[in-house]
Length: 449
Image (cartoon, rainbow, N blue to C red; front, side, top):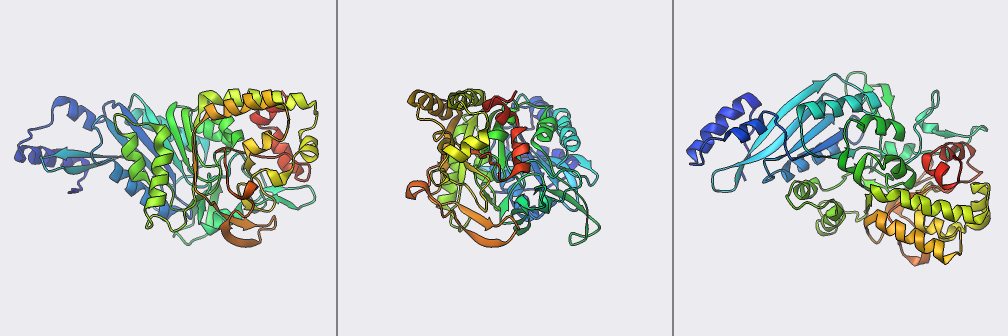
């Protein structure tokens, strides 16, 4: 394969010379229109929040995605928003064929350059999406959001440091995600910062983004699919909020290793005429299990969610809760749920993410209600894949780390995941409980509206 790098203005001249010399002939009018920013069939947008400790991994992800464009249809494009410590650009990449030897030319142009900005804010995200619509018109769009993530959990409140994201009135931490962020082994969404000068300088500004702000930021575009390459984003509370933003969402109910997803294979699938977003999980799993150079830790869980089916799951769970006659969900959990029989999805102490199916199925013995729930869940989770073991970071509420290891607690002796996590309401974490009960999911299933 042959790669030729040129700036955009020079590229057209070089392209004309090359194709003529190879006997292919000059590009026709339709192709020139495409190259000059005309509407295409499908555009994949990658929103890379890389101004943090994932910068190196996200840079490699961008390169791998570009490789996936080799041989892609001219009617498709890859657009990458890449926020780094030194530059923030929105740029387009395609590989266009020439000659008869399977060679391609790399076509790359910067669509827009931005000042140094905090990309984990709804204003910036919305501006970028509006720029995509204007500068990269397409009949359909897909999105990859890559960075850090913490599921449905809210961002820090005003005056509260991220190290103490969930601070109880007595001052004790309820949940602390800081170790995940600082160690850099895994991903979770929304941490972006600006440093004073060099990369090792002092952080002078930082931001995080809530679920509501993500929805606001992405609102200019309805996506065919959104891939969250970030930890814990297959959270039922988060998915319920996101259900109108895309047709499908692919996300993980557990931590995702820092190397992220294998974008060469993903993009190759998405840009084909027969692409099937529901097959991505198997594609990713094949790479994880096949390529020892990709990662030495075989840890992966991914689910593909049909967003049109999320409401049916909420209705089924709401009926189960209503059938219990409970008026306090936290009391119901304390009285009825055996935590040893609900699969935990992290090694935090206390755990923050649990398997949705295991949890809900402990709330009732009514086989009709449970059958309806399992049917709705099976229709919502159209693909679900995971490795035998899940690698996770363990730490206490005080942030004391006891290392990376496989999740020790396995219900029935082995991992069996439905693909979606849930938070378990508990009075022992009152600040988190208050935030949880304000989510649209909790209001719906516990009849709080």
